[in-house]
Length: 434
Ligand SMILES: C[S@@+](CC[C@H](N)C(=O)[O-])C[C@H]1O[C@@H](n2cnc3c(N)ncnc32)[C@H](O)[C@@H]1O
Image (cartoon, rainbow, N blue to C red):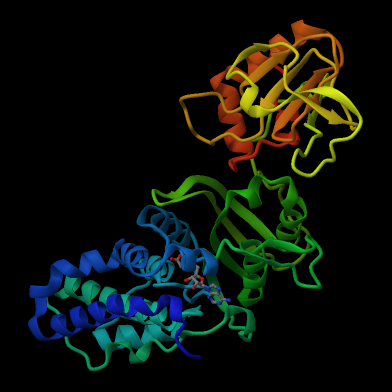
């Protein structure tokens, strides 16, 4: 395979790694300071500096930051795995997490030969693969330095790491390992024709996760960093059922935003490929909610029915409620804005809730409700959710608004759905505490 043009500038970084490897061999401890930097964070910073964001987005290249890498290392410590694969390994951060649980041998060459047989990694980009190999060689030198107090020399350090190679994960033959580590591209891709949990375009991360399972021995493990939408999104209910169908999920942990440069919520998924039979335990994809009534028992919750730039301006002139006209909180009368509309209308009183809300922003309620009153049916834009009480009118609406403003509701929503758009089911499943 040839180099991919968008990432070619990354060679500047791999050349730097090669130079540091070379000077460790010739000058020993003199170059030690640079090793720490290269093993922690610098490869991701160089990716951001050298490779344009548009290209990184196109191929889903976002290297795991050290605090998430530590989570992966911690999860691996609880397994007895000895061989590892990262099918989309980038500059090798998750393979480095795996090396934390791998013992070293008597000499640098012996460790490299041993690890070389146990570490597998693929990436479309030759530049990233070179960085991954170089960084693993660096970590071997550092580990030996920590135990012997000197840097050993060994000719052509990276020759042993042939399992880490430029390759398309989608076309690789089965490579059986004890554990897969995974932070796949979060791009979108067409679901394969055999796919039972999605049709059309879907999350590539969801596809990569299930594909990776074929490379794991029975009883082996997968430790993955995935977009939170797979954990909490209604669109991925079938995907979650598919995961539960072939693995025992042992850990689901929300991790918040990926890093300070990449504003996407992620979670850690740890699972064991089942040896036989059905799963022994139910998976807690989110915190179990207390028994009892929910908002959905007392309110009809719907997405506003007007898609303004698509729906024809036909029918009667109706008051038209849009998010930008809605106050941040409190009460609104029949909106003065009007539009011709012949679809479903909402009879006040009801509670209007903005659909776009930022997770874990402690400064405001994620689902701030506004009471809408008046005596005319209203057309509501689809950027708003509408909660209409089945009985109790304004009093029930005010009780819901007060409940939505509580910090415990924020915490529940963050747990239930960390992507930007509040869903009807997330609101309906809130326990009714009024
Ligand atoms: C989100 S990055 C993560 C890299 C690494 N796993 C980490 O945690 O730092 C995903 C990587 O997948 C690579 N990639 C995308 N499509 C791929 C494919 N079909 N086969 C192999 N690698 C691929 C990208 O080049 C990118 O380096």
